[in-house]
Length: 118
Image (cartoon, rainbow, N blue to C red):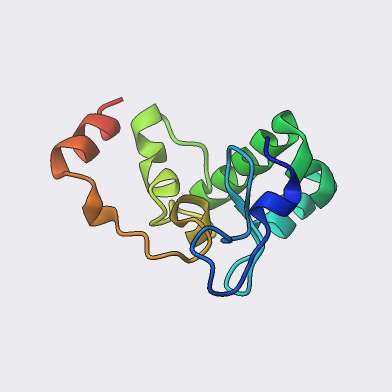
């Protein structure tokens, strides 16, 4: 993973989103999924930023919380993964990279159907 300073939030910098690791855990003025993941997993924010396994666990905890109840099929995770929310808490930044202008319409309807069908 890149060193933490490379990912820190920088106002006005398109690349300074404050997004860390493979799961893009975010800490910036519009979102703090890094802090939420830390509270859910009881893994320190610094470890979530620097350790790949911890970062993945943190992102998975957010997706699980966003989904709510465990779905019966893999395709039913789509709401949590696409940033539109499952049946639990909406973490817009999980898929939207910290409040950036994420638009699910960027993906074709066909791609969504393929993902939902598992």
